[in-house]
Each structure stands twice: as structure tokens, then as C-alpha cells.
Image (cartoon, rainbow, N blue to C red; front, top):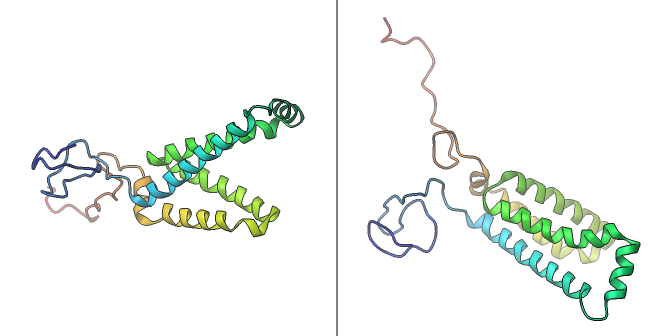
Length: 174
């Protein structure tokens, strides 16, 4: 994309050109901050990797008997192995588009899974603890909160509305 005012190349979606500071059309909402993008893309990559590992392990040659016995003995666990990475992908996708409910569902879901992981194997939970803590801090910084807040009616972006006029009698009224 090129700036219509100065013609310089723009690599990111911004409300204004960083070179000539001209307002860009169609940029009613500020771009996504890195405090949202970074953890979302990390979780997106982890979910894709997790889903690929599950698919490769389940559908590898010679695993048909094991797969069928696991599916018959524990169908809920079998299908949840597929559902969890897909749910993570969906929540991250919605978070990348500014859906606040997806942020809260993800934090509660991942926090619950982390809690049970700590109870099960506390010595192996430290990578999850670091990832969870850093993600929660980044997702709840002020710039992230502004990205996840809905835009005010009639205004672009999620900025606070203008202050109201002071109350009192109107001196110009007859």
C-alpha cells in the first residue's frame, strides 16, 4: 500500500502516514498494537504445531489399531485432543480482530488448564507459567484495552467520548 499524499510505501495499517502525517482513508480504527499481535501469533503458531503433531501421531501408518481403541475407550478425550487446538485457533483469530470476549474466554480457559497442569506436574509447568503471565500482562496493558474496547458511537477508534458541557441554566435562553 502506498500513501496517497506522498506516495511512499506503507508496510503497516496505520491511521496516518508516518512520513507526511496525512490521514489515510479507511483507517477509522487505530492499528492493532504489538501487545496484542505478539502473543496472539505465538499462540496461533503453537496451536498449529499442536494440531499437526496430533494429526501426525494419530494418522501415522501403523497407528490405526491404537487410534480406534482410544476412540472407543475414551471418545471424549479423543475428540477433545482435536477440539482444543481448534478452539485456540478460533479464539486467537477473534482476538486479532479486537473481540474482547475472546480475550476473556482465552484467559479463563488457559488459566484453568494451567491450574490443573500445576496440580498434575508442578515441575514441568514453568514454561506455561511464563507464557501465561507475559500474555496476560500484554493483553491487559492500556493500549491493548483500547484496542479491545468498542468504538464510541459516531467516533472512530475506542477513545473516550468528549466531556459534556457543564450543567446549569442556559444564559442564552429567553
